[in-house]
Image (cartoon, rainbow, N blue to C red; front, side, top):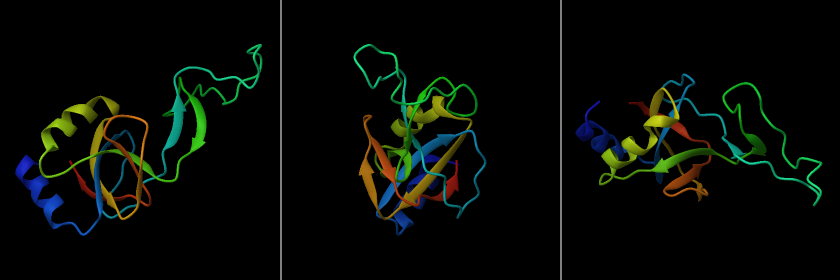
Length: 127
């Protein structure tokens, strides 16, 4: 899909918030994506002696190697507009095999630069 085609999709959508997300899972156009998880690279502990983990370590699956702080209230993506498509595509490429344009009408900001968490994020296009 060309940048111009993506720009047209963004311009035509009725969603209030649009994001680009990379994922290893297969989604179809119109499907609502699974909620993301709050992931931590480093362990966090419940005590000063560092004996009891606050969040469990994940050893298998898509979140392997991280500590899982729990499910978020939506799907993480990079906020995209008609003016920053190429930049966001470059930024997201290392996070999964498949790239999706997703949208929704409710969002909150994530912890990372340009990150948004879209509630009930629907797949607009498979890029």
